[in-house]
Length: 249
Image 1 (cartoon, rainbow, N blue to C red):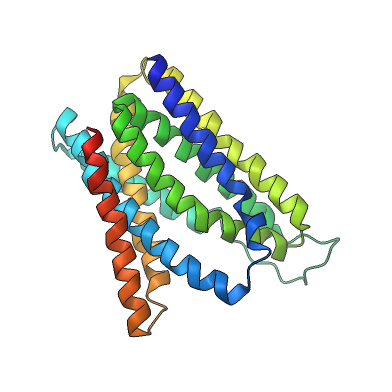
Image 2: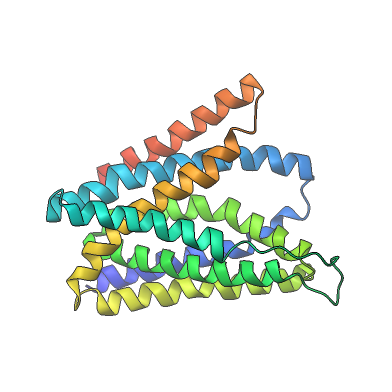
């Protein structure tokens, strides 16, 4: 159990520290940054799909069988992700951005990011309660997804009127909710076994939704054949990395 706690806390701290990645993008040309991120998004999409179908769902089915409940938990993960995206992360503001007027969408982004990170923390904690290899694979998928997401969040906060320094600090604070989520799951998970049974397929549904509706549509905006080809390669590398992580088991 001590090993589980050590790996889980170390993993979620690493994930949380990714929130400061935005500061490293300040010195990169915007077009260059976009060209890097598009392949990072491809890799992330492949890793999320791979983790869902190679690690999380097989674990859930092996432990509980392919029951109706498992399917409903997956669907709930998809519905919850849809709800968060529709009702928490996106708000319009018709006033111009100034230093004294921070757009509400920036504040809502912080709230939505806090919820998202908290759920990530729960998922990481639950995956380590299954076993350490599944926890490592899930952490790897979350890390790859967090890098482009945190860069995007940093851009939203700066565009919303926050200073760059404050945007980095607020991103770091919201990332701390992931640590809270992991600790909470490690405490209640062994007591409430049903929470782990629920969260693993729930996480799979969330990952499938994020990859399919947020990341892959972004990739379709690129129409140049050679770039599309390399996107496919990086997508397959993300899936392949999840296959290689099976070696840990």
